[in-house]
Image (tube, rainbow, N blue to C red; front, side, top):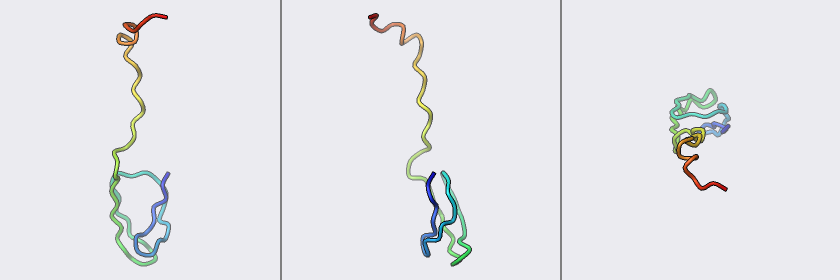
Length: 58
């Protein structure tokens, strides 16, 4: 998880993962608008059993 901090006073506002987040700092009143830089990480896909069976046999 990533620490979420105010851009003006650096107060820790929370921890978590987000794609878009609007949060107002209770200390200084700044409205922090955050967007994820990268898309959320997905679990790796399982290999296709048909493709795996056509590989070389050892």
